[in-house]
Amino acid sequence: MRLVILDRDGVINHESEAYIKSPDEWIPIPGSLEAVARLNQGGFSVVVATNQAGVGRGLFDLEALKAIHRKMQAAVEASGGRLAGIFYCPHGPGDDCDCRKPKPGLLHQIEKRFNLSLKGVSAIGDSLRDIQAAEAVKARPILVRTGYGEETLRQLSAPRRVEVFADLATAVEHLLLEVQR
Image: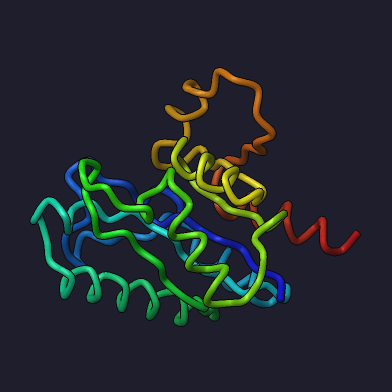
């Protein structure tokens, strides 16, 4: 199984400092839904791994989060794609959980669900937390400049093996070209 892991906010949909609290606030980044479909057509399964601290902070509940994810699933499917799973951490930054990125708990859940190692699997995100979680499981961290990507790029002080692309569509184009080689 070939797998790609995507962060949600800032990668698939526009980021919001006020959190995405309802399906109406979930707005896809142009080209992102089609990029998921292209990955599927290229033989990849796609999963989402996302921190959703707004639940832990009481800004929205799990039912609202599920409604947002139903909208995302429907939008991906309307573009010809499919998500093989959505993994989320509902905890806030002060909670002592192992699933909140940069900790690798969400990624370990993916390994367990699909019975595979994430070593070398592309993990695309827009934050330092995404990169750190990917590194913790020896996945291949990829940073997009959308969302918090530009800010994250400025934060990267220690040398890291992180590929950087303008957006999800550009990253996917690169991944698909690699497969063709």
